[in-house]
Amino acid sequence: MQIFRLVLLIILLFPAASGQTGRRIAPAKSRFRVLVLYQEGGHHVLYCQAARAWLDRLAADSNFRIDYFRTSDSLTDPLLSRYQLVVQLDYVPYGWTEQAQSAFVKYIEQGRGGWLGFHHASLLGDFDGYPMWPWFSQFLGGIRYVDYIPGFASAEVQVEDSSHPCMRGVPNRFLVRQDEWYTYDRSPRNRVHVLASVNESSYVPDSRVKMGDHPVIWTNERVASRNLYIFMGHSPDLFDNAAYTDLFRNAIFWAARK
Image (tube, rainbow, N blue to C red; front, side, top):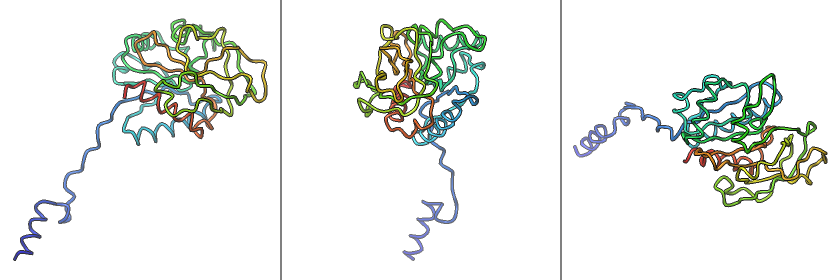
């Protein structure tokens, strides 16, 4: 009799023990949402594919949600209000509609969310029949694109502010094995806070395409939004570089304020 009562108690308290599944446990609510702008075409497609795979794993492991957009045309105030972070993943800063530009400017200037930009986000000039977006140039430190290393080069990146949260765990010097190393008409240093620069004397092979003071990671502290520009973003091999992925991971949570 005692055994019968014990079995009955177990069935009442734990329905699954009697072959019933009970209610499914709802997944935990996402900690935050990220909007990623990316391009599927062009010679950066392999980088974008590797970035998406890496981001999707990180989002699953860290419980945040990512929505991918191939164009900026749909950006509006209501749409951006859903996101705590916008990632401009090798997406150009020209050809945006007036509506998208207006929504993005308010998002940044009013601190409605964070922003990360990579590589192509600094392709500032007159391209593909579109004029340069002056506001975006000022946002990135008043720069205009001038040149790049078309044959690619490896180079050493030197961290200048190791105390910044985005640089947590990133070595003071790390090697990037392949990139185009854009140059600009001026260094953005006087208008932004530089976190790292490239040592142009470390280029292999050497190149005439140099600008002297050459920041490659920086943040604009004059706007309300937490923001970070990371130049490196050409090769998918970057996602095998622990320094780069640590930087990327740190930047996501810092810019999203998580």
